[in-house]
Each structure stands twice: as C-alpha cells, then as structure tokens.
Image (cartoon, rainbow, N blue to C red):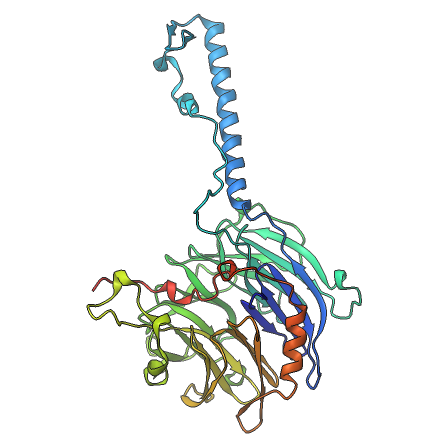
Length: 464
C-alpha cells in the first residue's frame, strides 16, 4: 500500500511539486498542461528511528563514566593522604563508608545506564518529515524531521539531470526541541525555527556550519507550543516575525531584535493552527484560524491598538452536517449524551490568481473557498467535495492540489479559473497516476501509517 503524502508544496511558478510521504521527499515537474509528472529527485531520511533515545543514552553513559573516574580519583587521593576507616560489606569486601565519600561523587553509586529501547507493546516509533518550506526565492528547501529534531536545508538544482545532485545538502541542524514551524527572513538570509516548547531560533540559510544545539539561543519565546511562524514588513518598513501558539496568541515582534514586541493580537479563544498574509492585500491583512468556530481577519499594520480585528467569519453552518464519529470528543471529555463532536481548521492557503482563500477542516472531505477583499472582508464562495478526507493542501498560480487520506488516489488536482471557480484538472488522472507510481513509501498494514491528523490534539480539554 502506498502511504499518503503528509505534506505537499508547490513552488511559486506552479511548475514544481514537492511531496513528503513518511520519511521521503519527492520533487516532481508538473508544468501547466503536462500530461504526466516527471520525478526529478527524491530524498529519504535514513536517520536511526531510535536516534533520540541513543543520543540520550550516550550522554548518560558519558556522565556515568566521568563520575566513575572522579570517584576513583577521590578514593585514590584519600588513600594517598591517610588510610580511611573501612568496613566489610555483604559480599565480604572492604569498602569506604559512605559518609567518607565526597558529596560530589555520591551520585556515581548508581548502576551503569542501560539503553531503554521500546519493548513489545510499546507505542510505535515514527521517523517522518514534520514540515516543509521553500525559501522566498524557491532555491532552497527546508525540511523538519521528527526523530532527531532537526532542520535539514537543501539547495535545489532544478536543472540538474542527475537525480542524486538535485537535492544538494547544505546542512542538518539539530534543535533541542522538536521544530513545529519554519520560515525564512524577508531577504532569505536566515531560517526562522519555532519549536514545540515555545522558543524561536534563527540560523543562517546558506551557511554550512552546524551549531551544537545546546549553544543555540532563542530570539524570542512563548509559554506555549508554537504552531505558526512567518516574517513580514510592517507599516514603517521594518521587518517583523509573527508567531502563533496553542494558547490563542498571535505575537508580532521586531526582527532580528525579537525581544522587542510590536503588538499581540487578541481575539481567538482556542489554538491557532494556520495563518497567512495574502499577497493581494499588500501585507496589510492577516488571516488566521484553528480550533475556534470562526476564521479571523486582522488589519495588523495600522489599526488602532487593540482594534486590529477586522472580522470573524463563523463556519459552524458550513461543517456541522459533515461531522461524524471521527469528530467525537474523547470519552473522558464527553458529555452525558456521548455524541459531543468538535472540529478544527487545519490549513489556510491563499489563491492569488482569484484573490480567494482555500480552507480545509481536519477529517472533512471538502475544500471551502472564501473571497477576501483587500481591506480584510471575508465572504463564503463555494464548497468543493473530494473523494476522501483531506490531509493538507497547497496552491500556486493556476492550481490547487489536495493530499487525500486514500491509498488508491493520493491527490486531487484542481484548476483555478478566472471566473473564481475550481474544476478538476483535465490531466489530473494521469498526473496523479504518475506521482503515485513514483511514491515508493510503501506500508504493509494500516497500523504503519504515521499520524496524518494531529491538529485537533492541540485543543485544551475541559472536563464536563
């Protein structure tokens, strides 16, 4: 069985399509009008699935061995000065009484640490691509990994005919905590990395030097898991970094001096899973959504402090008849009826050609299209149904592509028309077939699927 794509990405021209399945990244050329997709290159992350466990074990082992050496040195020094009183233990061996051992070395009496590999019945350990992002000039691909908590940067050689040379590794930068979102600075000189513990880091995009993760210093921090990060230009021409978190905050800080907060946008009540800055609004409008029952638009640049919120578009009526058993609240948090359901918006994508927003909800098999004016007014346009639940979406130029939770049809491809409608691409079936055939991420059983729908797990639960 072919594993679905958990992440997909189009470059700005719409000619190049990136797709991630489990721990592999594929690059296809899919120029408008092409009958088939051409696989240019692929990269598979071969990192040890127990990398983090082994790394931690190695650190403990080094600490243990160091302490053993210090203990022996302390004992030898004590013997050299004067023979301490000794006692006989249960094994009939003479040892130094514990009260005569220096306090700094007492902890070394622990046993040699063992490698704690998961045993039978333990939860599965996954090695997979967490996220992908292109630099603003489309020349670099930034990939975040789950197992070793790294940011992997590639220079993309689109014209290279040898597949092994298309993805040119720049560096693999480890991060102390798992990366949760990534982007580049406005001039593409830096990669901005947000992690699951609320910290944001900045590293050079093109520099090959790998920094020890313990020496990376956050440029800003939240007190909650970060979900989105994006750089932009404010009304005064200054660069800012926008960050959103699980605690419904959107923070706007100056960059690179990100300890200076420009403002915080208040209005969400639940986690924020996605935000975008549509091009046709000239950077003035921010659109955000997540665990709330609405999509918010913000005039974040020049609005009066505290009055940046332009509108909240309620989406309950659009999705309430599409909720099913997959949207049931976990039993521990259910109400007496046992039928309590909940939903969340998992991704927003801008359709620049038609000045619209494409919206998907987790575990719902429809794309919802909204019209967005340059001053932030949002209105519903149309719903487009697909054959399976949508994992994620991407759009560029004339195309909108959906990744589906379907092992027989991995994608749905729409043409974006001048009249603001979407139609299934006339070459969709051949494109999808060629992409699916190139996907060599095969699983033997449904239980081998990596988690595809994680967004709603960010919701903070309240007992009824």
